[in-house]
Image (cartoon, rainbow, N blue to C red; front, side, top):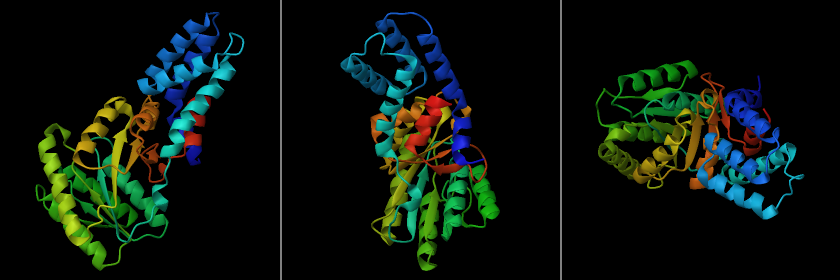
Length: 304
């Protein structure tokens, strides 16, 4: 099954709910104002964000569609174009980004978003492109995180540097980057802790990791990726806001689109933050992560 088909399947809950709702709106004879109100409610339920909904309403009002012109078919074309206009500027291919090697990538995200699995998938894709990769297990506060990362690295034959449970995360990051530099690795990918409930400690940890990396190369980390879980809906917005206080985010990877009817959260994120969306995950397998392509996402979201 190709990735677009998997994406369609992943967005099935979101798309079916949305399309069914639109069918019901247009299958009843209503004044245009009521139609627009019903559409607004559906968009908000799909988690595309209030900012997008307000702008969409203004654009519809500005174009002044007549009762005959505002049809279901017309609406799908309009909404698809509006969403694509928001998503296209944040579409960025992580796998073609260039920096001085080794490229240091910090991966962050709250516990439970699929961060470790995402790192495994990233490594698999980068390795398939011929890259040499080292992984630093700097989430040293959860034994499960280290063990899961080890399993992934063994599965895809990628080296890992780890330390004892509870040891200093910055020390692991430093050793990983130093090893990568000395041994001509292409990528050094560092897993980090995600305990947002203790933001002060997390901020201190991130600051220290970044400080020690800069001792080796002042330009690092080259990339800081935030992994988000689509099933959390609007809570993903809160996570971005909190992590941005801790460290600049260069890109987002969205996971678990297959587990939610609120896939529109990606639209809300793009509209509010304009942070590049690097990739999306649509399942648990190694190949279930690929570049984010705005046009494909819109087609799966609107036309499933």
